Amino acid sequence: MKKILLMTLLISHSSYAFDLNDFVSKAKEKVNELLGKEEKVEVKETILLPKIPKVIKDAKSIDVYDKSGSIHTQGAKFDNLPMLEKRRYRIAFLEDLYVSVYGAEANKDELASTLNVLEKGGSREGVYRSLVLSSEYSQLEGYQEIPSEKLITFVTALAGKFMDKKFDKDIMKQLNLYGIKRVMTEKMLEVIDAFPSDGKDLRSWYAVLSSDLAREFPQVWTGQIRGVTAREPHYKWAGSIPLQHLKSEVIIKLHKAMNQLQK
Image (cartoon, rainbow, N blue to C red; front, side, top):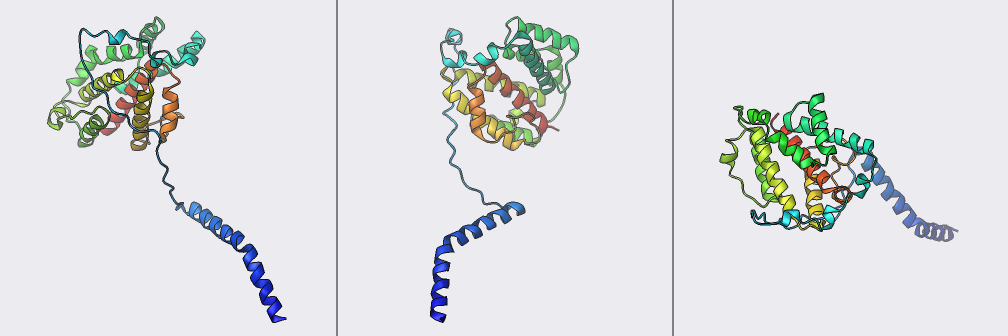
């Protein structure tokens, strides 16, 4: 009788061993999750930083007028929106831009003027340049303000990774926050223009940049995409919008990040 009972127990243990192990494993996972100690699974990144293109300045070059690449034709969804819907997005961009660039909200006249530029075919990049080349911005650059060590460390690292450039820290320290923001953003826009016009490498570059900024400045970003640390959503978004929208996001993200480092 004892032998039969023992065999029954052994058979029962063998039959349910895997179920029991699975139960214990799942129980451990649940406990770890509740304690905030869930095991991190390393995921191989599929979107990598591409080779940074060389920025070649040639006054005789007409490449800037070449709009044959797909990067110049994407964004049909926005282009096909009704005028009032486009206006809503444009106003949101302008409000975000003024706060990021100047650190203050635009007044109604300023918004109306720049909105008029966009609705008459002007570019977002052009509107941005008009702000940083204005006399108001020049006055801000003239303020005597020592840039923080965090800001200098950030911009030099950013230049090395996303521009393939080495910035002299001592020279950067001679500028204040507003001067650094203007120079850094200008150099970033030059890199964007240097990428092949098929858009593939540019989207990867943008995705890595956006992911890094989301991870480094989690407290800054609002909205569904800006604060996402994964690269894939940024890559997909970059392929769905007009090139000018991608540029404006880079402009705003850089200014917001640098503002945070000088506080």
